[in-house]
Amino acid sequence: MTQQARRLSGKPVREAVLTEVRRGIAELGRPPGLVVLRVGDDPASVSYTTSKAQTAAELGMKSDLRVLPESASQDQVLAEIAGLNADPAVDSYLVQLPLPKEIDEESVLLAIDPDKDADGLHPMNVGRLWTKRPGPVPCTPAGVIRLLDHYQIPLRGAHAVIVNRSQLVGTPLVRLMLNRDATVTVAHTKTRDIPALTRQADIVVTAAGRAGLLTAEMISPGATVIDVGITRTADGRLAGDVAAEVWDVAGAVTPMPGGTGPMTVAMLMWNALEAARARRLA
Image 1 (cartoon, rainbow, N blue to C red):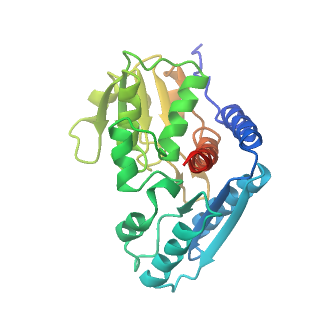
Image 2 (cartoon, rainbow, N blue to C red; image 1 turned 180 degrees about the vertical axis):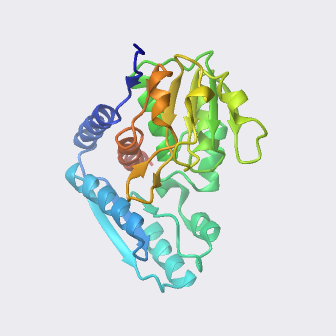
C-alpha cells in the first residue's frame, strides 16, 4: 500500500508566527498602525481585505480598512496614498491587488512610502531583498520559507523548482531560497519541458493557478511539494495546482486550502510589526 505524503498544514505555522507578533507588540509598548486599502468590491478582494483587517485587530494592532469606490480615479487613489504616507499614526499599509483596470498599478506601487510598504512590493524593497538589505518581504514567499523551516525541510543544497515568475511569488522566492543556499530553477509559461525540470527537484513550488497542473509523473518520489496556486472550479470549489495523485508519490505536500494560504496573512502581520519597530528606532 502506498504511503501518503506528510501533510504540511499552514495553520500551526500561522499560529506560531502570530504568537511571535503578539509578543513583539507587547515589547513594542504600543499597537502598530496598519491600514488596508481596497478599491472597489471585487468579491475575492473583499474577503482578503476583511480577513487581513480582522486579524490585525485581533492581535491588538490599530487596524483600519479603507475602501474607495470602483469608480475612484487614479488621482483619488494616489491622494489616499499620499495621506497614508504623511500620517504618523500609520506604520504600514497595503493596497489590495488587483486594482480596477482603469488604475495604473505600477504608478500606485511607486507612490507607496517604501518604509510603510506592508506587502514589500515597492521597487526599492525589491532591491533591498535582492541585495540582502533589511526591508519588508512579499508575504506569500516569506510564508513559504517559514513553513519549510517549521517542518524542518532543509533548503541548503536542495534543488528547488518554482513554477511561477511573478513579482508576488516566484521572483522574491528565488532570492529567499538562494539566501538559504538552495539551487533554484524557475519555470513559466514559455518553459519547454516543465515536467523534465520538476522531476529533478527536491522541492517544487507551484503558483500557476491551474487546477491539477502538477501530476504524479511530474514529481520525484519523496519530494516536497508546496502548492501556492488557487483556482475556483466550475462547481465553486477551491482547488490548487497539485493533483490528488501527487500525495501518493511526494514525501510532503501542502493542502489546498489550509496550506500556504494561512501563512500569507500571518507574514503580513509580521511585516506590520517590523515596520513599527523600524519607525520606533528611526
